[in-house]
Length: 120
Image (cartoon, rainbow, N blue to C red):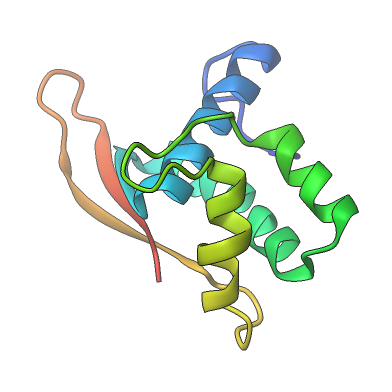
């Protein structure tokens, strides 16, 4: 989880936040967050999908180190199972560029630029 932006947080908080956001993108397919957070979580999600495409045991363990252990109530699958069984096979013929960040509006209060990050 290498990143360049500090996002106004200490490293442990930043890492936890990016793990949570990446897990939500994998589980739900899209999330709404600030533009800078979306750009940072894009890097993590793209790396996770590339690991999912590899599909071996080592890639599964590397992805498990990043993703939260969250279970989807509808399917009963964890985020890791969903990544390797559903999300990654959709991108088997694609070399990168699995996500899209769309700027939406400026948040009332602090005028932060909001964005939606979606899986293609």
